[in-house]
Image 1 (cartoon, one colour):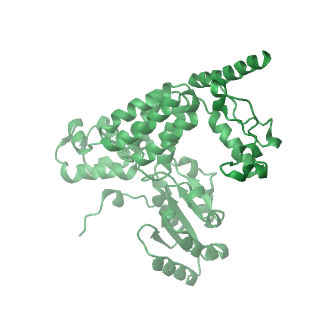
Image 2: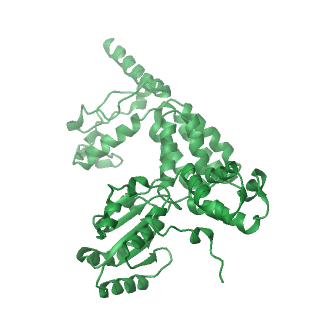
Length: 418
């Protein structure tokens, strides 16, 4: 007989056995009342890996006594989906298809579901680790209720294991060490039960101590696979921590990302953050971020942590300015809204002999003048008084602006002496 994983054996059969998710299973909630009424509706269950999305879907089906099949979008073929739909159409009662990883179901397969969701011949409980507003066809999404599953806290997991699981398994483990497992698996029920499974199979006769756990759990089960919604949440948290000048938070989220080994996404975010939020306040740092990211790729992990750690702290401590972002965004908005006016004639290309015949002359060459500066119009006439760049007094940006102010002041003095 095949040995089934403990996570499979202990999968809850009813919502009464679900860990956490009280916000969804409250007696005033939609799910509780859906089960009570016996009238199912389409649902999208959204949350971290191992949090129990498929488990919740199957438990609901069991409690409502609904026939169902599971379709895994990552491994099952289109033919299986069509077969399930055909079967659902023949049954004279509600039939549920539980779609695991629906974000991996390409758009044409998602579209197959539409007419059957529309006429009610099929109910779907779809599960995804990615934000459904980004990853699921809007037409599918609009026909479903969306429920976000919360992280299961280590304490919720500990209480469940201690009261309902461990006593039956007869493991020799203290509460402190059981809490250690729950803490290091970050509320991932599947990962936690996999560790317990190993203990049951290979260490059932010995006392489980901290040293043994360290040998078995060689690393923390950090919440940051290199895909899925939680990964982008951590990237966002890193960016916002740098923008907010908080080096402790910056280093923490950097560590969460380094665990995944995905340097490409990390590099893109750091470079974007440098030019978006540090910008003209510290231009040399922007260039150093680029070279640091290149160096990190050459070094690889774990050595790359040295370069990343230093640059993230420096970015947090640096003066900040987003004036260049505001300037280019305002200009882009103007251009996209139809303000694409003719270039002034004196700025047009004049690298041909007949340019004067077209009136393309009058350009004043700044290098022919003191301080290599001369005042002349550059914007189209209709935008003459438009201001795109609004300077700040942050860091190096104040020095850059002082230089331009100095040039204009010197020119004004020179003109007044004529």
